[in-house]
Image (cartoon, rainbow, N blue to C red; front, side, top):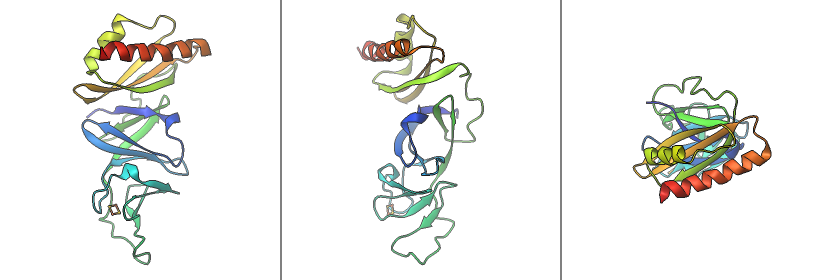
Length: 196
Ligand code: FES
């Protein structure tokens, strides 16, 4: 399966957690306090709580329910608060996926490694990530009907459902602030047009 763009790097600062969908898989994407990026099945190995409700503790993600900690390097359980003296068995671990950042975009692949380069993003800078209630083809048709005239854009799609697409937009890195603002407004117009 190919890598999917799930958001902008700048929208996931250190010690933050977000939820993403990748090819119908519910994924928790998070960044440790030290800046390490991780993407896992959004399901705690203990009782199935969504890990996206959890919180970052240093280099670990702690589940909201019983507080089990899972390390950013590999997703193994590192601590069980009710048994602090116990070294958790290696078998207790989250299902980890490949995640990397390129062009200011976070990419996740469910199988194999996210290949580099994911796409030719040279010369582009991150602009927006938004969800559009429309199929990917409808969205891209709307974009070609009303192309943004003032700068080059790259549109990266992550199809989430038949009628829901995550759109990650990059803009020519040379575009000035006025063009960036105009392009951000164009994204909203595109959303309305695709959803109409
Ligand atoms: S469900 Fe996550 S620690 Fe219990």
